[in-house]
Image (cartoon, rainbow, N blue to C red; front, top):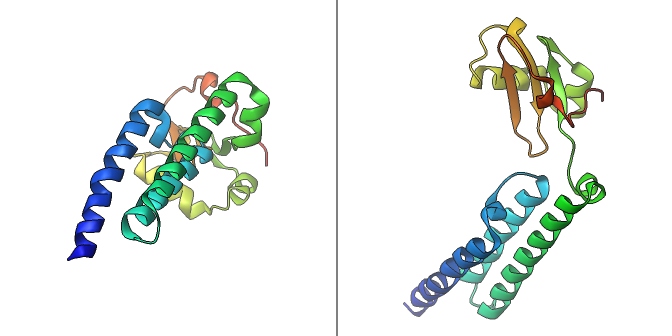
Length: 164
């Protein structure tokens, strides 16, 4: 029973603490805008879980680790917006994997995907006619964007690698 109460108390302390950090750090805290953001989200969950579930992890160590993660994330997010060099160093560039109904097999392989993976993403996006698929982009977050319709504004392809 003592273990149960200890875990419950740790939850009552740590979860609101994560919420406060998230509110202080802003909306990007748990976003998936870059691979770096995703790693921070996973690390936050891992620290929260290990602090709550492991009595051998001092509560203050969990608090310090979370504060450290959020400080690093805020710092890197600010550096990314200040210089393109930092953004280029941290972020993957989106990759074009289909263009005007044509599968770009070299790029699909570079993305470690298969044609079947791309077809599945086309179905998810309700693409009904391959000839109307203007672009499929493997985003820096690991998501796949499907742009289909009659016309594609080239602004949507800014920063997208077109060749493997």
